[in-house]
Image (cartoon, rainbow, N blue to C red; front, side):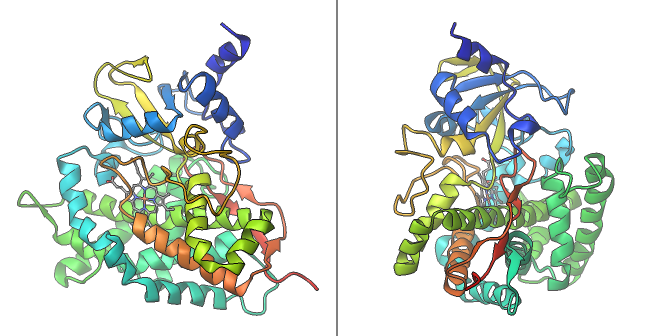
Amino acid sequence: MSSTKSNLEDVLVSERELWLDGPPHELFAQLRSECPVHWTSSISEYPEEAGYWSITRADDVHKVSRDWRTFSSEMGGITAVVAAFPIELMRAMFIGMDPPKHDRLKMLFQAGFTPRRIAAHEPAIRAIVVDVLDRLEGRETCDLVTDVAQPAVSRVIGSFMGIPPEDDHAWATLMNSALGAGDPDLNPDGLDSVVAKDIPEIFARCQRMIAERREYPTHDLTSVLVHAEIDGQKLEEHEIVMGFFLLVAAGNDSTKATYCSGMRALMDHPDQRRLLLADPSLISGAVEESLRMFPAFAHFRRTATCDTEVGAQPIKGGEKVVMWYVSSNRDESRFEDPDRFDVGRNPEHQAFGAGGRHFCLGAALARLELNVMFEETLKRYPAMEMAGAPVYAESAFINQLKTLPVRLTPRR
Ligand code: HEM
């Protein structure tokens, strides 16, 4: 056995120190080439958690994603670490269910999320983004994460859910702390506070919205959850709350992440930005390239329901299987020179999942939001430049910057 191979065998992929500057892309490249299905034996910060298999190649991620009978979302949770979040709450969201219950719940929303139905929201989404950019009037600098991305995406998902605008900030703070539970800035009170403080607050806030809609049905997605019937039965209260949580969490975090990393890439690569400024029809390609290179979620996880194998590696029933989208999206067997940011590439990526039952419900909405946000930002601030060091959230799950200071219009 070569020494690099034995070094890889000792690697613990999700250790915090490997992720401080974003995903460890060199490590993933080595795994794809030398040990594409890799065993991490433990997670230092969570000694009680079992180890997991890392799936790093696009073809293998595709296989795991599509085979829900062998690789369950329900059995053990959907992230590598589950300590921060009670499993029964994870299973109350359709992202944490297997068919047939998953399919029935997802179907309630699917018709409203098709590209055609979502396209009807474009004027409203553009108005939200323009309003957020208007608030920067007179400023020389801002933080793209907190001043632009967060308020814009929170209002978009807030309007879908029926959240009043004045509550956007409170919901965003709750979602950031639950999804970025291990990050000292996103969740300053520490891991235990998610269960002790955040989840009870999410329930309390949500229960008020549920009670209002029981009495007076509305046209928002919260009302869809409140009045849904699956096999003749209404959803339980915790299922409604967690359905709400899923939509708000996914809507808040993900689009923000890809927008900020995409903007940073355009500032780092002025040649690519010049192409977009000369021909704005290339923006949709830039959005796809940003999704490929900076997928909002570094991974999702399944649990093997029986003894099986991936890429000739035996996997035992009950073991965790982690699909690393940050790796599969840079698989050199699919993408030439995968670390190069190229707005003309128009890639077929796995940022929204790899074609299985859990393929992102919000893909059309996220694409529309990202296109509008890229267009409006580039139009208003074509020469924006970095004004400080961007900082990544400390997480092997959410792949996002928590700060991105920029100078909106360069000094003459
Ligand atoms: C850049 C933006 C986004 C990215 C990269 C993204 C990524 C993903 C991924 C990878 C999954 C699959 C999870 C799995 O395999 O277990 C997923 C599922 C999901 N996403 Fe997104 N997402 C984005 C935006 C959104 C938005 C805006 C919404 C708004 C409603 C949304 C709602 C959902 C829901 C509900 C699911 C669960 C689907 C299911 O279990 O069938 N996402 N997303």
